[in-house]
Image 1 (cartoon, rainbow, N blue to C red):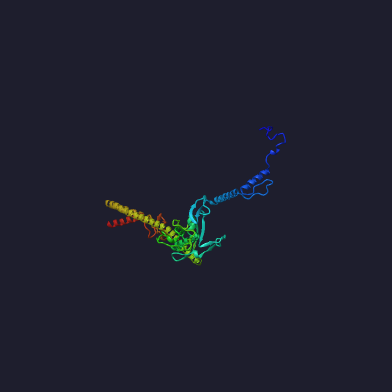
Image 2 (tube, rainbow, N blue to C red):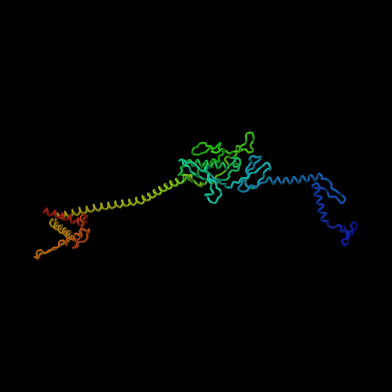
Length: 454
């Protein structure tokens, strides 16, 4: 409809009429919204200028309030029912106080408030000390307090040894850790201490203090873990070397309630056994005799070390002397064998020479005898000092200084083969004659025999 037609309301854009048709006031808009929200909540409804006071809450307002409260409660319930299990932990869900399930890391939903979740850290490595306690001081000697009740143990040879252990463990079964025993850490300490006493009781003191540390630690860890995995000890059966049923040294710390009361937590027949702990490492911190006998034991250890040192020195000397003696024995055997071969060969050579000489003598006895005589004289005279005299050519009296002539010969004899005047060398009395001297003596004997025959 045009502005100038009848019924147009005289909405002339160029005239002043109709200016009250502009946009609504901001205060009025806010007031209207406030009235609507108040009506929704059952409040007073806004009236006109002459309206006066408002009326009471209406039925629609109460319904709206209940709806809002219900929505808020639903949101709060959903928030309380959602829980998140962090990495490295497990969530143990309890419904009416009874175990329901174990949840893995991530977001999960429970029925609040009948479900309750216990978060257990299974990656945290925990530490317990047996036989000593750390006091937190920087100095190791001042920061360790001995616990004689736990540390002193009896060995197989009836000696007392002070043993200190450190056990590192973590939770492997959250359900068993929470519900099977009341105090799992205390049970762990008692079990490891009992296993240590059993292992030490089967070993000698020397074995514990010297080379047996690794074997002892392995035995303690294996035995302790086997007991922990089958705890409580009511049906504990150890598959050890004895093959007998053994009971734990400490009383079981199982959660219990009086007979007239029903326990809140019950372990069903299908529950996991053990206390839910896994031993990671067992470290033998120290093993030594008690303080009262440490000085005497140190002397015994020193004596044992001296004994071992002397044994090692004796073995080294034997390893040095025996090969040398064997070498000398082998050398002497070789020398004896060579002397044997030489003597046999020399005797055979003399025998062959005598056979040849006998053959030549049978053919020409005179010639052979003269030749032997001359060869013998040659051999004898070549080794002695000689004085040649022409007895027929002069009648003068000759003076022979025999004392001077004999001195060089005696000097040669004392020198053991030093050349004498005239180019001859003398042999010492009792010395073994050479091969040439033996041959000359043999020829001389043959010559004498020939002279006797003739």
